[in-house]
Structure formats: structure tokens, C-alpha cells
Length: 276
Ligand code: ATR
Image 1: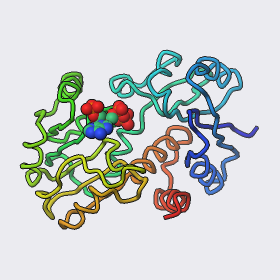
Image 2: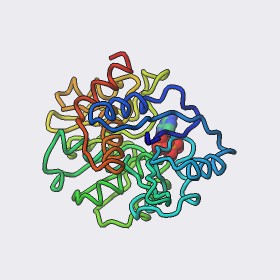
Image 3: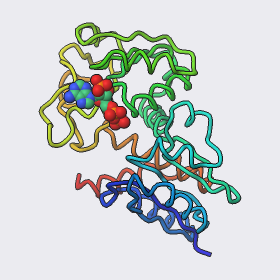
């Protein structure tokens, strides 16, 4: 029987996940279909019960459900529980099991670009949900030092204090961050600053970025934020949010099928979707 996969969220019409996963099912000869489901906040519980009753094989979870879904699942992977967000669910013999592939996807995308993350030190800009997944996953991956800069420092402190994995960290202010950009081998921008329509905004002054740094921005609309453009101008290696999106999808696909898929093909698919 054809297997059913999908993604639940609100809004969902422009999700790039269906095209990406359906293409992979075709590629690997898997008899399955992946559909977008528009589920409003108030309908989450009913939707999850319905998906379970229908026997769906797995689904992705996106805004605004990543946190609320946790209490509706039968089992949650420890990293996803620590992060407090689930983006991937697998039906394991009738039980819905939740995973987080956003943070691990980001790390895998970074490793794809630069091996040997362990000895590096990183600065993360932002302390929201996305930052939390990335920070915890990088800490779990064994990176030596991760400093955080956030407009609201209390949120960054809370994030650092709630991390179950050992990592050296300082919460720093804007001025200190701007001054010390050259000291980091990795700079990761996780806020919404620079996203359409405010494409001229910068999270902080990129002046002190050097060519020895990898700068990653999780935004993919636009494909190059002003921050990334400035970093590239300083000679830094840059990575946009397509990498994280592709690798979270690749890890979800692997959880569902056991196959780690062709990420280059996935990236082409996403870029086609974005019109890039
Ligand atoms: P997400 O789940 O996408 O990470 P979020 O949890 O709402 O979204 O977090 C948004 C992040 O972007 C936060 O770090 C937020 O900073 P605050 O904690 O100070 O709110 C940051 N952010 C969003 N808009 C910002 C702005 N205009 N200036 C500075 N920081 C901003």
C-alpha cells in the first residue's frame, strides 16, 4: 500500500518540503506520497489523532506547532525534548515518535562545508527557537566554545543555562560581539534580521569579520542576506539557510526510510523552488 507522509503547519502553502521529499521517493523507487496539511493552532490535537488513526508513516512539523506537538506524541527523542521542539515524527509500529532534525541538520550542513568542527569557537547571534536547536546540537557535537549575543541577554543566559551538553559559553553584548568577530571561526546568524521584506537590516556591524571565518545565516529568503553579502566582501566563506533546510530534510528522510539521500539533488530542487 502507498505510504503517506506530510507536513503540518500554518501557513503551509509555500512549503518546499513536499516537492523535495516527493522527488526523493521517485528517485529511490519508494511507493509513497508527501502532502502539505494546513493545520491551525486550535486543530493540532485533532490533526495528530487523525494522522495516527490514518496510519501515516511520518510527517514534518513546522510553525507554529513545533513545541505544542511534544505533549501529543507517544515518545520523544532526548535531544528534541531538551531543545523543546519537534520537527519530524515517525510512526513506529503505531506509536508516534518525535525527533528534531533542525539543529542536527544545521550541524551536518556545516560539517559538509568544513570538517573538524570540534576545535572551533563559534558566535551565535540570536537566542530564539532556532538558536536553541543549533546551540544544543553544536554543543552535543562537541564544539569547544559557543558564545551568544542576543538583543535580550536574559534569553541568551537562559538558553546557555538550560543546555544539557557541556560547552564553554559567554553571553556577550553587542559592542563586545562586534569588536571580537575576528576571534571566531564560525559566526551563525539565527535571527529574522535581514529577511524579506527588511533586507537592508543587519544584526550587528560585520566590519571585523575576517577571511578566516565561516559565516552562516539561517535565512534563505533572500538567498544572501546583507549580513552574508558583507561577510563575503570581507573574504569569509558564507553559507545561507538552504543548507540547514536541505539537511533537516535529509535527516528526516533518513529517519523515515533508512536512506541518507542525495543532498546536492535536494539543494537543486530547493533552489528551483526559490527561483534561484
Ligand atoms: P525563531 O524560532 O525563528 O528563532 P524566535 O524564537 O521568535 O524565532 O526568536 C527570534 C530571535 O530573533 C530572537 O533572538 C530575537 O531577539 P530577542 O530575544 O531580543 O527578541 C531576535 N530578533 C528578532 N527581531 C529582532 C530585531 N529587530 N532586533 C534584534 N533581534 C531580533
